[in-house]
Amino acid sequence: MKPLLAALIAALAFVARANAQPVADHLKCYRVKDTLRLSGTLDLNSPQFGLEPGCKVSSTALFRRPSRTST
Image (cartoon, rainbow, N blue to C red; front, side):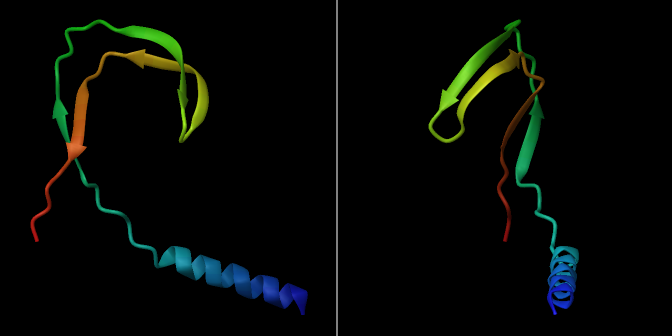
């Protein structure tokens, strides 16, 4: 009985994943020229993610912001 139940759960999980719709991209990207030549490594600490050691920072090429959707 347990193998049949495991097979049923696996089949339902596959069907649920196959029917999932992709999330529409809601960000608009703009090219920017960053005159600040920034590069380095630092440790970040945030309440949401905790300690993230060894994060690399550098200048940017794109600026992303939420796009407006027309309904």
